Length: 310
Ligand code: CP
Ligand code: NVA
Image (cartoon, rainbow, N blue to C red; front, top):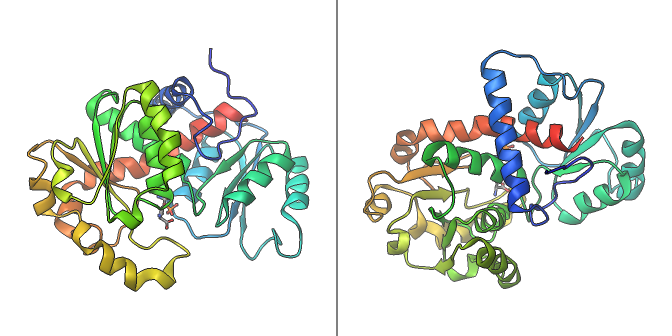
């Protein structure tokens, strides 16, 4: 049986297929419970710290609502509220928070900070997005895909856009772990880093999935899911002009959708979206039902992560 008590969620690399399946099943149960109006008590008496160096709508609200739904207390710590890494070392803040809280969410820039929080706090730490990874988002994406298709293994997932950002990295990890074929369509300079591809090749080998990186948008053919994300991530504002030029041919639009030759292809986006850039308004609206299911599922999956690990 799967037991995740005390575990941190830093990249998703260290979670097995069975553990991810367990979290998805738990998310489904918690979602049903919420729909039926049953009040939860699974985090009663628990205090959860929410550290945010970068802004957030979904992740912050998912942790807050998920925690309160189960009777816990969330404490928001914004970038100007604490001294993390400035006037106090990450190690010291971690040791203090670990004494007071039962779990810590971190959203920020450096992956190294979330890893240090986990190492020194002694309580479960969840990565709510860093420059490199966004693991909680992937759980919501997997749940949403499962709701749509009823299964994961063997589906063709195509990520179009910035394949080297936190979403590209984490989607490649999550999909290959679960046996979903993962294709990146992006300019070569924005393909995932070779060392991460190599790690994911091993997951793919084990799960029976395939990884493809290509610059050719026509290779979107046979996609079950097309996924995109912003072309300029938080903290990359200086590269905006160059990125927009580079990624212009990789917009998710009607022409691209027609190239799948599959009328049932779904479109997903982690949000926030910049319409007219990575995705056109018409395609976004056509798939809005699924995109906002995906946003809602952030809450159910994050709740499951907290409940399972605290
Ligand atoms: N998708 C996502 O992480 O959204 P927020 O930045 O609003 O948390
Ligand atoms: N790649 C985006 C994801 C936002 C949820 C960013 O880091 O800004």
